[in-house]
Image 1: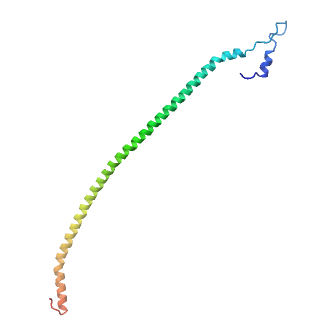
Image 2 (image 1 turned 90 degrees about the vertical axis):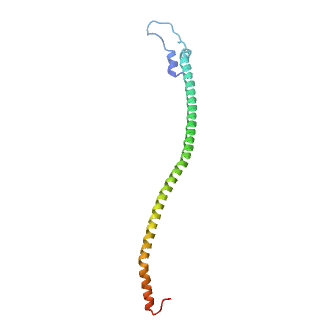
Image 3 (image 1 turned 45 degrees about the vertical axis):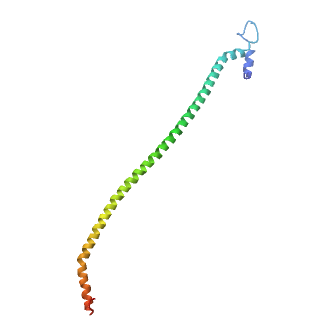
Length: 146
């Protein structure tokens, strides 16, 4: 227990009773033991509360560690599932891209065929006139065709 203050010590030796007729004089009894006995159940209850709080903190730390481990495991599971879905998504995207490329290729081939047909028609239309023009020019030079 803490040391008594000067005021407490002086109060122990104070005269008890009102001034006047003499009374029995004495030193009051030391109440330190009584105070300790009075506070002992309170401190015992506080020790129990402290033990319970330590147990609660330990249980909370164990629970937090378990939840943290569960969260890490769930995170790994989600990442693994995402990686599996990633392959399927890439395949789907590649298939869609190839389908669009096939349609575009067919369109380009059709346009190229149409252009080739147009060039063939123009050639068919112009070739006889060009051949006649060339033959005329060669004849104009004075040479006979072979």
